[in-house]
Amino acid sequence: MNRRDFIKKTAIISVAAGAAEVSRAANLINMSPAGAPEDAAMRAEDSALTPESRLIASAPMLQNYAETSIGIAFAVSDLANGYVLIGLQPDLSDARKVLAGGYRTTELSDRVCQVRITGLQPATTYYYRIGADRIQYKGGYSMKNLGTEEDTHTYHFTTAGAGAKAHFCVINDTHASWRPFGLAIEKIAQVAPACVVWNGDASNVEETIEAQMRIFLNPEIERKDYAAQVPYLFCPGNHDFRGMANRHLERVWMYRQPEERTVRDWDLGRNFAVRMGEVALIGLDTGEDKLDTNPKFAGIFQMKPYREAQTAWLRDALQRPEIASAPYLVAFCHIPLFDDNPKHNPGDIAPADKDPKYNTDFAMWQRTCAEMWVPLLEEARCQLIITAHQHRYQYFAPTPERPWAQLVGGGPEMGEEGGKKNPRLYPTVIEGEVHDAQLHITIHNLLSGNVQQALAIAPRAIRQKKKRKRDKA
Image 1 (cartoon, one colour):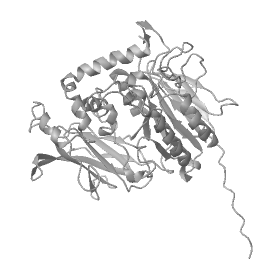
Image 2 (image 1 turned 90 degrees about the vertical axis):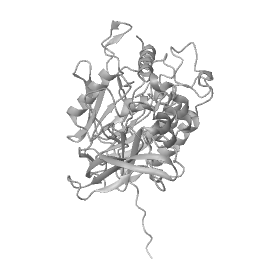
Image 3 (image 1 turned 120 degrees about the horizontal axis):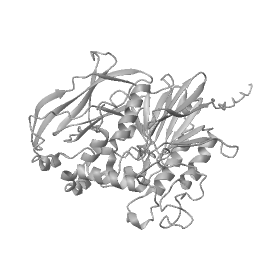
């Protein structure tokens, strides 16, 4: 089974699992970011949503790891007003209550509660508990709190920052395939990183918010609380834009709050520039693997201006003091920014991505993004770019012409292709940790259970700004 057939087969399974909700997909177009209150009435006939059912329907998920903020999302089974109790004390004796949503009104939802917490201290451990009020809503003057439910577990996490532990893991191309995803989560639990970068294609083609919730909040793996104490960052892949629900993935995986971004960058809620100990982490979104002009997509994508906007953001992000001063600079994006195979489509073949000299009609790597982003990353002395998309682990060592290394993470295939064994196809967890004055990169082969490759990266030279001489009076 080739890469495309694998994705199609997995997508069919995913659609079948959510078949009961597909008929409602069109209603997602008009939903508010976390599920509109009026949509609760439409769902009332669902026998699974009874007053006796448990309101909190998943463990919490820590999203958008940062120095002074964190996102916490969890599923609910009925219309609810979600909240988080958070404090520095393990018993939460100093806890403050943060409600879902921003100013003015809270974010009522009958599916996902999202709480974005700001004003935190860098490299600091916080304790938290999730809760929700069950809300009966019959109209603007007829609403009632039917009772509060709190999770009995108290969780904890540590924010990013120069004083944080420099230890991360990367997963990618999970495609709602539970066996490789479960293996990845078990490996992450074993190595215990400070955060995880999910480097795209968590999805296939998702038409309903329920399918998205199944992927992120209720995956079919043993560790249901896999992201309750290990924060995650997310770089979307091309499949994370496909399907009616995936056009608004922020209903399940939140953006950062608008006040955490500049006015110019307001819509760049997925990009991140995070300092973690000695490492600066840069997250970029390569978007679709087809051009906006490809007739298959009916003109409903605008990736070109999106990538251009990220270029301006990247230029400024790399100059931030905490990023510029980090001994190690690692960038993440889903589609590779380099490939030495002349048959691999570079993603800029207009108008429909087809050319007989390439072996696919979609981008195997992203020349357009490379031309915009790589000069900035090279000027900042980026040492490593970690990518995904090709479903086959590869390592491209630095060269005099290309001074940075590129890693391509493995895909979800478990050693088979087209019904035949292929040991080159295996899922990976890429681990990075600073110790002994180097950034050590370990590639874990989840099929064999062995270390596939180990690398060591020396610190980059930090350019010091010249001090201006003061004129003597």
